[in-house]
Length: 410
Ligand code: HEM
Image (cartoon, rainbow, N blue to C red):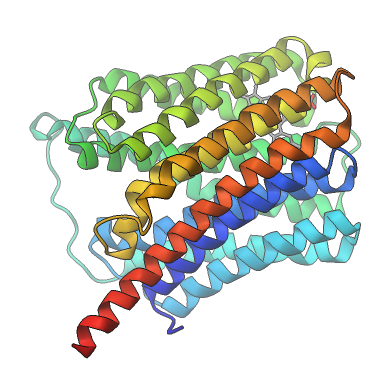
């Protein structure tokens, strides 16, 4: 395969759902083999969510800035380091091989640093700056775009902070604080959530033709996020329960405000994109509901952590990737639609059933109502769902290449 911008995106948007699929199956397997739990979480975060964000940005940033990547090999190295790092970390945790975990974390960190470096090179490159427009002269979407900028900027910084923290924690074991949770929430609430927020504010109204209704609610989303994210992560690091409660509530407000903002705008999209995004929001509300419950009653956290994770990491993030993907992957591949539209609804169904029942089974198992072996089955169903998305995304890129080849021959 010739390495160009399109092939880098194709590799990223295929590798990411494959990682999510394997991670979901590992989450089920970890119920009988505990070492694979951390492997599952790290693979979903570093190999699934992070790589999907890299892939989307490879196309979105040049398009929105009107500038070009300074060095495509450097962009390819960023994505390659990210993918290799994620799988090494997962295998390292599963096989209990510390050197693999360390090498993997260093590679993931290198990928994040390159992400930021490539971004800075791109923005400092030649190209016209967009003209400055007074606030009152801007269209609704231009105002929304302005409010979305802090989300994406913060997200770009937090992926470096999160991956650096993982490297640090490989060599330093703090005597207090819950640092595995600090890492998870820096990556998920500090990197993934604001990137998903910023991207949805930039894209959704352009796709659906329906404006965002309330700038104030977007402002509330931003302010609650700016309070909740640092409060939660600092509280987890210093074991400050009251600060954690305040942060958890602020974060829940921020996430619900986001859902209320985007759902009406996403509604006119085609069924698969709308369905994926709506289901993702449903899982997100359940997942953060558990999170807030843990903040108020820490004993519940110890038992229902895996339920919270399946709901947020696979139900929310997995279905969001699928929903956005059905609208975005064809655009990234430069074709009118996904290769096999008939697979869209079964895929969403499998992911929804897999994540929903997986969540339920994890909870029942933790309260002793179910054998640990049973949890693998719904996770397998969800994993097959996520794999179907990966196959469809890869075929969508391949299908364009085929079409182009046929046209050039005829
Ligand atoms: C209001 C928002 C949230 C709150 C208050 C919250 C709170 C918590 C708490 C208290 C735990 C630890 C439970 C325990 O073992 O005692 C936890 C674990 C975890 N949460 Fe959250 N959470 C929130 C949002 C999210 C989101 C949106 C995601 C993913 C997209 C997420 C992913 C995780 C993961 C992966 C773990 C487990 C990490 C591991 O086992 O290594 N959380 N969360």
